[in-house]
Amino acid sequence: MRPVLRAASIVGARPQFLKYFPLARAAERHNMEHPQKPVSDILIHTGQHYDYAMSRIFFEELGIREPEYHLGVGSGGHGAQTGEVMARTEQVLIKERPDMVIVFGDTNSTLGGALAASKLHIPVAHIEAGLRSYNKKMPEEVNRVLTDHVSSYLFCPGETAIGNLRKEGFKIRSDSGGGAASADNPLVVNVGDIMHEVLLHSMEIAGKSPVLDSFSLKSKGYFLLTLHRAENTDDPERFREIASFVNDVSGGKTVIFPVHPRTGKLLENGNPFGENIKITGPMGHFDLLKLLSESALVLTDSGGLQKEAFWLEVPCITLREETEWVETVESGWNILYKDYTGPHSPSAPNTCYGDGKAAGRIISVLAGGR
Ligand code: UD1
Picture (tube, protein in one colour):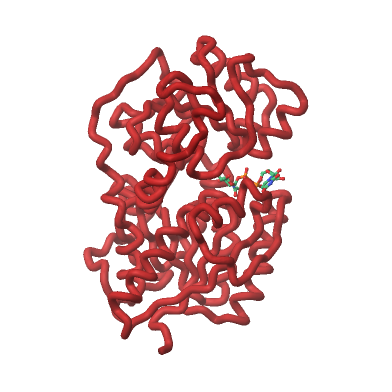
């Protein structure tokens, strides 16, 4: 039977593999429940992330199928990387002519994929739409603003994102059904956060991870640190400032620091972190979640970890000047490093960002009316 929707999903960077997982599962569920209206997709991996520990491990852990296309874009300057994603995606889209292109988050793969589709007049669905840091020096901010403005379907993780889009002139329609949306008349919907569903799934498996023993750690006896954003790693002075903040806050307590390759390269030129900060390679999803859930505090510049900490009720310090995930700060679970004055032990509810069923809503909107 011909699918009612034949989409192309574009992934390329580590968090996008995680965000794709619940969508694929929701599509499978939809097809079991509505065999007369099946949906399908072609999975395109741009190759922005290519190391085993940055890419393949997530496919293996979550059982994500092999992508139909692997574009092998690799690393490069922002222009070169985004341009390669665009050019190579365009070739696939011309050949496959999908009904829709689905992009996730705010990476160069998101923007390259969205632009390629938009110029071929293929509707774009943006998952994690409407987030804003209001700092256009961040490549991610440029990527997400531009992607939103060429998208036909904007799936927001929460009410703040909806409000951000309203400020930019998007009309928020009350009807979330029906397939009739276009880039000129987009559909903006709060579906909740797609990462929540990944967390609910993965924590069941992560609970069995032996990672604490492998680092000789006790529950709540250590901190977790991640640091990879260009804004923190491109400027050596800024990098040293962040390191000195982390050294101070840790007060000699063990800090586990799984390093992203970009940060790893920087550390080869000198390590400004104290001896209590244990540097290790990038981790798989399950080990990282286990480490996070048992840590007393997480210090991070990752968007995903801010929310995972929030859901797991682990206090978080965000190593940035601002965050898109403002609800995590408003609730007291997350604090920007410049506002940090001492240990925080919040107790506010962490129930914004939906109920962990975002992917099912997205599939029913996309398949609806077809
Ligand atoms: C990208 C996203 C960022 C996201 C992050 C998740 C953009 C602009 N940024 O940042 O929003 O939070 O992914 O991890 O798209 N590298 C390797 N091996 C790999 C991948 C990268 O060594 O498998 C190195 C590259 O050589 C490069 C550096 O890491 O020097 C940065 O990689 P890149 O994909 O450009 O951006 P990220 O920092 O990962």
